[in-house]
Amino acid sequence: MATNERRAAIVGVGQTDFGALYASKDATRNAHGLAAEALRAALADAGLDKSELDGLVTSWVDYGRMATVLGIPSPRVVYDLQGAGRMSGMAVLQAAALVEAGAADTIALVYGNNGRSVKMRYGGTAASPIAAYDTMYGMTSAGAELAMMYRRYQHEFGIPDGALAPIAVTNRRNAARNPVAVMRSEITEADYLGSRYIAEPLRLLDYCIINDGGVALIITTHERARQLRKRPVTIAASATRGDLWNFYASRDYFYAACDDVAQRVYAKSGLGPADMDCVQIYDNFTPTVLFSIEGFGYAKQGEGWEWIKDGRISTEGERPVNTAGGHTGESYMQGWAHHVEAVRQIRGEGGERQVANCDTAHYICASPIVSSHVLVGE
Amino acid sequence: MDVDALVKIMPPVTDANRPFWEGTLAGELRLQVCDCCGLARYPEAPVCPRCLAEQATWTAASGRARLWSWIVMHQKYIAAFADEIPYLVAFVQLDEGPFMYSAIVDPPAELRCDMPLEVVFETLSAERAIPKFRVAQ
Image 1 (tube, rainbow over the protein chains, first blue to last red):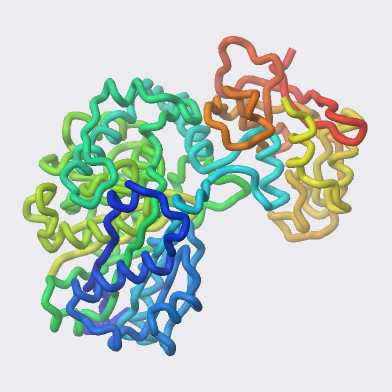
Image 2 (cartoon, chains in turn yellow, green):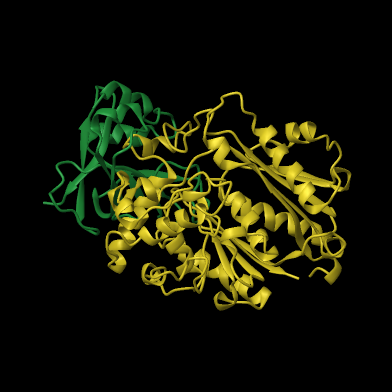
């Protein structure tokens, strides 16, 4: 258990302009450069000098080149994590634990992704001989895996077509109020229902927006956070749990893993769903939002689609979700930008999309590694 | 279907999986069954995921399965399937336990989750065949 002074807090957040990056593809765009731009913004946001960083955690980009580009040659903690969406939550959990353990005092977490410009597809013919057992049937991509889960979930719980529409519509409404979002126009339920199928039953408007971009977070001790200019956002609880087998698709929609993580973050933080002023949910595809709110006890299993209706998840609603527009409105940044938004909401920096009196934020990622944190403003 | 393109993206036959692929040519869906605890696994793996034993015997499965879920793919991701769009991909659970992605041959107008299925083999070339499923007779 960390002493009060060493409790981990997020003190700096930064990101690139996702909408501007989406407007053009540039094959020479450099992932390390995008990450560096985000870190520059996060340092300015925190009011920290680069020399104060003694840890560097990267995802999507490798730590060696990143440390060289950033001129951080001798960090006490340094490693990279796979460029997968499940790793943003893992990075925060680990950095917080390392700060609390005293392995480093101030860790920069940086993410840079030029996948859209270099035509990276999160699906296609895989190199792994085991994945070839799936691709030989035309099966590929996490979206198709989610579609497979969602069809079964619809069958098991009697969920009608169109049940995901409020998620897509709310994300786009929030994105329209986010100056750096890719999608600045709102959509209607009819737009959603009219969008073409990609992996039926999922439609284009259920899908995240692949984009280039960079995101950075700076995590330090509570003691140091109190000396900085912005409101400290402490990581009151963080936990993860695998749901790993041969496939991305989970037979219980990640429910058991989510439930375990939920019990632990609620117990450690002393907070529960009714205490969360906003919820930032990893939404690679819209069904993940339902699996998350059910797995974390916001709604009973099979009832999430009714829970999200009628404005409950809007910024003015009882439980605002993905206030920056999420992966289907703001940009697919593999959960990293969700963390930025959680911090901004707690600081009251949400602009037009600010949730009133926001002191707590809950991050949830339901995926083959479920992760979650409870963030609390001082 | 571009059969040559499909064969190119199939798992290469190796010492580790040869009995499986020979089984597809012989009309058998062969699975590794752990000599120690009896668990069947698919696809091939170096040890049993339950007891970690290496020793396993390739055994013909019943070929019976049930349909856990399915999708219809409308997007072109894989060149070999470009002419097939939209095409169906099934996620099936074999009676012996393992799950696998597969295809459904001559699917009825209405599919439903948990439908009983049985394996069929489609010969692609003299060397390769692929297991698929049809609704059980």
